[in-house]
View 1: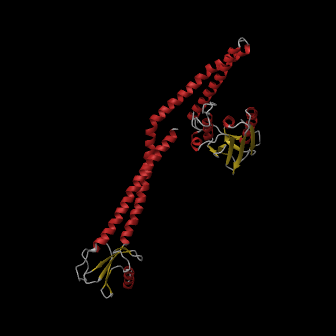
View 2: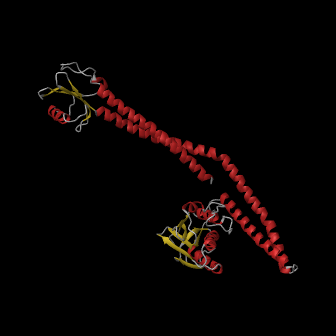
Length: 413
């Protein structure tokens, strides 16, 4: 949980920083682009009436090559000045002929990316002013390059700062979580002894036959049943507390997962049959993985027990296990019952999670699937649930497997 919280903090901080960085760099780029356009256009002021001289302003001060073309009232085209070395006078005349049909007085030409401005003099002649945008484009491209470099560097630096900040920010939560985990572990461990004493004394009292009254014997049966339920809850809490303390397996051994799935199905089949369900198990042979055989068996037991509890009477529980290539395997447990909504499929692995719709009857404490998820995570896998929104609910477990299979029965838990 702490790692998830840290990741969320880092993602939120980085998202905010990236948005601000992109906004700032984009604003600088747009401002620079608009400034170049403004300076380029304003470099050519309206000339005096009936004057062939250059307009006011000095384009050379802003490093621009310019060209001036005059079209008199009779349509004669004259190139007054041409400092743009890669555009000939004839090409300028062709460009002017194209621009004469356009309504805009300023803009960029389709050819050569020249910025132009058109001015109609009082004598009926039209002046076209052109400026080279090479310097502008060069500057903007350089700004984009520098912006990318600065942005990547700043984001990388802030990522490091965010990681350090996230550690500092979650420290109080981490300490509180550790105290809670330690309390749960200690309380669960301490509760096991008195519960064991209560169960053993209850069993001995029932076996002795000293209690002959029917009502009192029923009370003893109730005490034993509830004590067993409480013992199961305590053991589950202890399992989760240990998983929080050691989220990764310390020792890994090759285990035949195909054998584990098949043996768990055979063991659970009588219980499922007594619950008026049936079980259909098909597992690909000799699929192996590195892990803890006892925990993997617990994972299968939890999924089968969950399917048995929440499936419809008379339905069939389908267990399928196949390899995916040479590096992964997929286990599915499908049962028929009330369809799980998408929100519940996301939250069903949370501790003590309960759904009023599909879990209206008190059949558990909401810890089984949380334990299953912790086991899958310890084995570097993924578990999730899906529903067809009609009647079938499927739990998927995807685990990494080894390339070399083991013979059935070898390295078993």
